[in-house]
Image 1: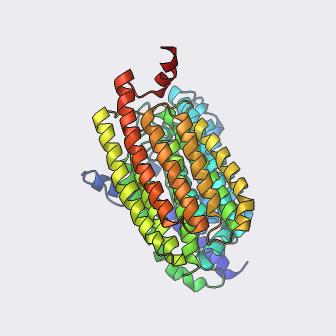
Image 2 (image 1 turned 30 degrees about the horizontal axis):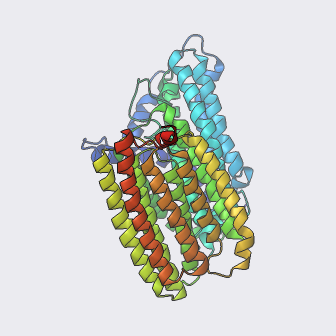
Image 3 (image 1 turned 180 degrees about the horizontal axis):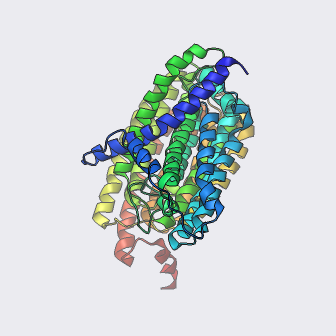
Length: 315
Length: 219
């Protein structure tokens, strides 16, 4: 473990934690502009977090300790996920701790605990939200795994840093299987981050909501942590997508100076990605909850197809 | 650069397969025609790229023919048929869509496995594309089987022809020009005849559901 490795690891975690709300703010701002509304400021998520951290956190009388623990657990999972994904550099001391399979497991762990916490209070909304979250989750996970596997087929490794090193620093080649994987990944990440065809992040207190239903009972610093974790999740998914499909600009292990270039590259890519998400959310409508399994089944099948095409064309 | 172009052909093949899958899972008639148009455009691009790589200039001609027929003329005809028949509703399927897609995956695995020994024999620039083309053909078959209405079946038939055309282009650098012209004309005439058929079916049964055709012999 070298000094530059520790430095890049720390920098990555700090940047993930600091920039994640900014990314959410950026998407929300563009979405408001595209819908002809006057937008909240770019820093609105930070103000929101500040407000929530200063508020008292109310907990229901019969809440168990699980309910209090879940926000910290989810936040921790998301921070760890962000630190494993190579956003700036592939020289990450924490990366060998978890490969792509464990990364998907981390997301699953966070999901299980937040769903348990939502059911803990025993309100109808919480249980319904937990049920829907699990419905989305168990369909999205295999698709995400398959997407990551088709990338692993190229680099012959399930470690995300090795995948990125192989994709970014080898001679440029077109992998048709990755085109399928990209579409599948896009569908999965929209579903996982409660974005428009699955869930509308702008609605509260409606029968259709998924993500917000889980957070209904939370307030104060717990809610702040969960909101922050949600932006971290969006950041993590964006970075997985960028690492798999647009890995150019991420610094190598032997060139720590390249990180100076990696940060603007990351900001640029996230900016463009966030804008495209806003466009997508403006032109599309939310689908019925019963169409969600079909949407995610399509994502899974596309990912499988990508893997098959990869296998066929690789020989 | 020279290594990238065959990969680009592979990519276009993958896009064709993706579009074939999208067509088998598509519920809306208009979107189906749009997907068919996109498939035609991809096919034309693939043909032109193969023509450029192999310096077979007659392939440019067949790419142009594909654009005129499958991107402009046939979609226009299909739109006109839809307008005149007044169909705007969703397509009905015999098997539900997720099951169809699962069967589709099976079909793709079958096609890929089948093509592996063949592609070992050929030394064409993108031998892997044969499996993709075969999968496209079989998926279009699947689409024709699972749809109950006449118009999606016609689109499935045309998509099947796209797959065959791609197989011919990618695996053997295109058929002789006479054959290609003949096929192009056949497809056009086929669409015209099928269009007439659709109107006839509609006049007879007030619906485009081809199940009504099964009862003809009882009369």
